[in-house]
Image (cartoon, rainbow, N blue to C red; front, side, top):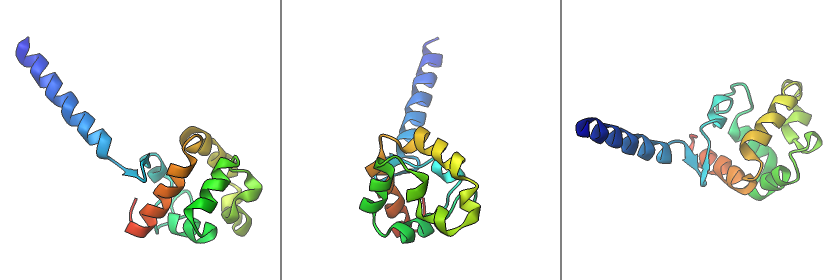
Length: 118
């Protein structure tokens, strides 16, 4: 019994340590973002490099997030019909993952672009 508890505690420690360091940029966990985005490869969503170029700096992107990520404020949607069709999905992901973390999310995006990886 004691051996089982020790193994469980060690596994919890290892998993906890891994989770704390995985996919964090700018203090924001970007793990879920990686499902649809990459820095320089188009996936389901636009590349983060394209997003960074469209907004110019993290303060501008953070303001768009803080203002509620309104469709009319999304620069890439205006420039590409492909992203217009994904507006609903992006709104849902914003509400789940970014809302309440607007500045950290914008910082994470720009840091990932500067590093060349999420």
